Image (spheres, rainbow, N blue to C red):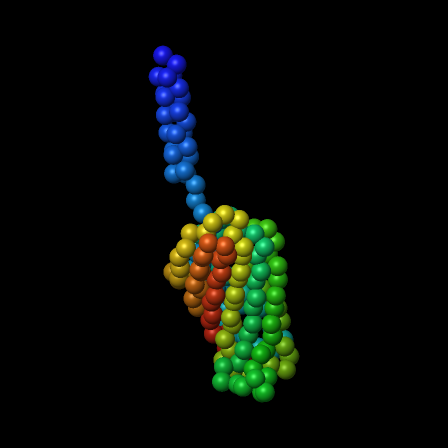
Length: 165
């Protein structure tokens, strides 16, 4: 009788562990829709601009977020000063909010077409789901953002163009 009871107890324990494993999910970066730029019209030197990387789906089990932004004039060489400006911010322990960069177009910016680049990096707090996800677009949004996840870290890269007159 003791052997049957022990067998049933072990069976219930094994069933319980396998049922719990179905609920576990690994780390995953956010999946983005694109960039929201405010104001959305053509920009001028001295204008304040807010750029937001809009998430379609929030990431999970991530920490140590770091976001990097830069704007470069298209067709200009490094020597000509193609880098208009560069921004960096630490996102903290979570990525629940859409990453945002608020900056001012320098008053001496040369009119032209510029490319804004965005990069995000996170450490995974759990083994990541290996994969790649591309932005799906959204009404009033610009550019594209691709999110990539590996076992230990996740990242996202994206870009769009804007005009400065």
